[in-house]
Length: 295
Image: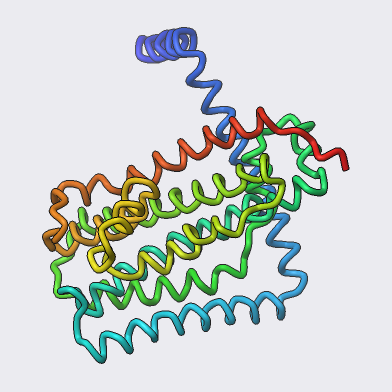
């Protein structure tokens, strides 16, 4: 055995012995990802059994989302700008939040309908299986029809990228991508919190939709147009402003009329990811306090 091979073997052995959690953790993550992809494959095959229904529902999602943007276009066609924001700049806000939300809505369907599982007692079965509840709920269903809203958001986002008067750089493109990821995490956290409430209320509360679906409507416009209490709520309580508003300011090079530092836009995607982690901790607390319905 050569000296280089012997050295690599020694280093690998020491690394595994000193940091056993590293290899074990990676192995568990890979195994969980493999199982999740299996869930996704089964879900897609099931939905493709009715392809005409899938196509019509996806087209319906695309058309419905398009009417929302047409309303924004009509407003800008009448007033030309909104507190200094032009239509292409507002389209950037619209594209980021709708792409992020469509991804989150597609993969977190299990959390969205979790109240029904609590009422029927089906959640008990998930607790008996040797897998985490989060993985099992995310694998319940991949809502393939959300591809319609996703496609519409991508079309608007692509148009905005080409229409804004801006010299794009790899850093700005990376920030836009990270904003989509952070936004998907933030909305995923909201769906998880909505599901967690069902441990105590049994029924999923519709009021939670005011910060999920209502939050999407809110984020389609610049945060600076809203009143002070509303801005604070969707910045400090629900980090919606970090999904697209602060990143868009950084991408466009616009100063924040509310006085937020410019560097905040570059760090904003981290807030969505942190919100998801906190939401999952709250979810685990709810699981520990779960009492079966007895049905």
